[in-house]
Image (cartoon, rainbow, N blue to C red):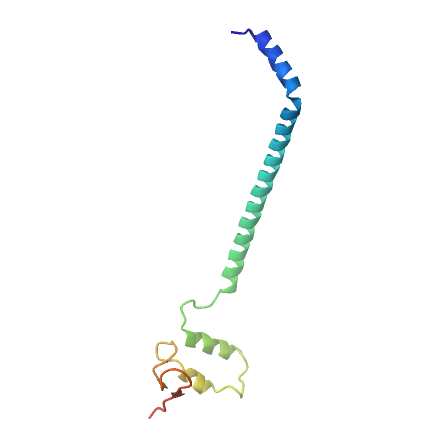
Length: 120
């Protein structure tokens, strides 16, 4: 086995011979660390951005019912706007059934260009 003095001499010789390789490895390590830092920063930015979006979405839906039918949503939207003379609101509410979904059972003639049955 070698004594510590010989080990130090051999290590110094090895470092002189392979100096270029050692420098190259140090540069690769620095690049890798900086890219990891940039990746971590990007992940933190995305997390902060997602958190900001969540806050915005929460504010945006404040005060609304989330479980409303299509008919209720349509009527609520129309109630907030000016009433137009060109829209037949009675016909619009007739296209929905009692559950608030589209009423397809009133269509006569199957598919394609059917007409609505008249109620008696």
